[in-house]
View (cartoon, rainbow, N blue to C red):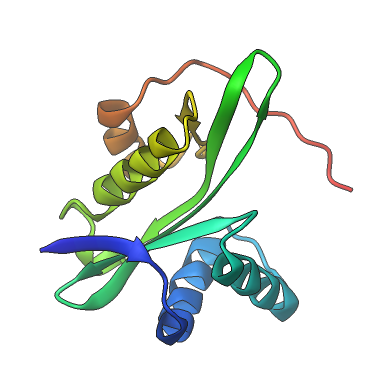
Length: 144
């Protein structure tokens, strides 16, 4: 059975392993300080938030998210990172994490939860197309 809850201090190593796998998936390299900073923020649970999914007691999925202002209405929740261990994919872990973030945001009166994924991420997009609406936006960014 899948359970989703806040990450505990004892989850630190398993969380980092999953987060590093997520970063690797997107072919990025991040300095060790980024992991430390993120973990501190998630433990504070004020600006940035994290949930973990457990299957048979093992941390097998993570999600990171935050709320931000919305110029055209109430606050919205951005689901920034979502990753599940490869050996448990297809067992409902990612869906459970999305549902938990959605419920968390609903309880805080957010009007939407949204996220981005790479167009080539076909595995994730199969799930996302079932649980959310692709509004067709294209993302642009400027690296600083």
